[in-house]
Image (cartoon, rainbow, N blue to C red; front, side, top):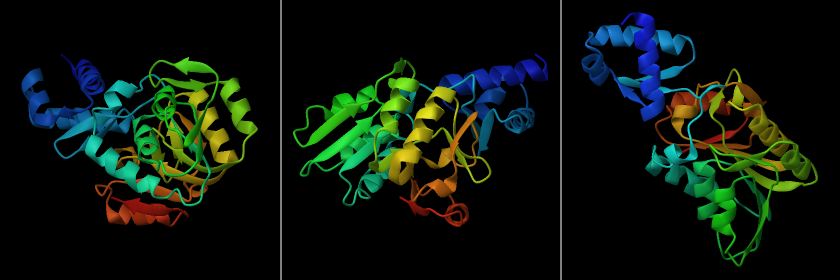
Length: 253
């Protein structure tokens, strides 16, 4: 196969499996490892993958987004640490927004159960998980349900949010960069997230280190809009410092 065909195959494998390994790709495609590295550099140049030491992982774009099911299998220990640290930022908040996605779902699970909270969420999974708590009132945003993330979007959700003043919002993103802010592949999701940013008194971004330096299709907020960023310790300290210069406190766990 030629370079274009090979790169298409590599991208398809990365999107199917969540990541790819240079040595395995070279063996599977019967080419030299340096050929694979050139292919990965080209794919990264077009914003389709991010290279790592010895491999790469796919970037979510307007035409590609991982499912909630896949997210529950990737970097779970890091996501649990991030969720626990994020939940500790609750402070005196009484009304809390929990975003769609697996890490926000873990934050919901880590919230204290010995105090009264009102949780607003677009996530069906999070709403179901909290619904049996005697100390938590759950408000599920209405709207169209996205099959990939089991979360509601469109004007029903944004209209509900517009009527709230929320103490604290835990927000996720598919990508965060100093140049392009926080991004997500779907315009309908971006609308919900941007409305949350507008109505929340405090805003916390929680996400694994692989989201940093990544830009997806739709920008919904700037880094400076957030009070705190919580990520894992694989984000280099120098890079965390660069984000903190834009305003938020950056916590690495």
